[in-house]
Length: 74
Image 1 (cartoon, one colour):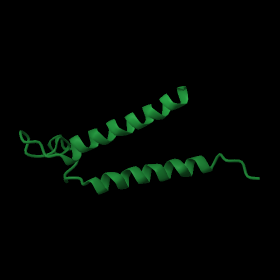
Image 2 (cartoon, helix red, strand yellow):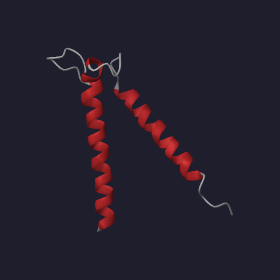
Image 3 (cartoon, one colour):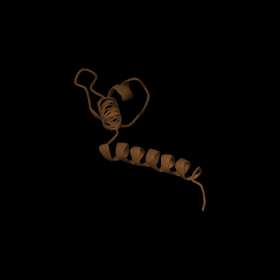
């Protein structure tokens, strides 16, 4: 059952990371009247969901490339 728990933890980690990205880079807060990332000077633009998905896809592509290097050739 440890394998299933590992998969659940990966899903939970992905959900939490996505939530933090949404909260800090997409959602405009009423008190700040901007996103927290913009208020902190981390970014100058309002991000979209599509941009975050592109960022995730780019990370997955890099991960796949690094895994290919270590596969034995037959």
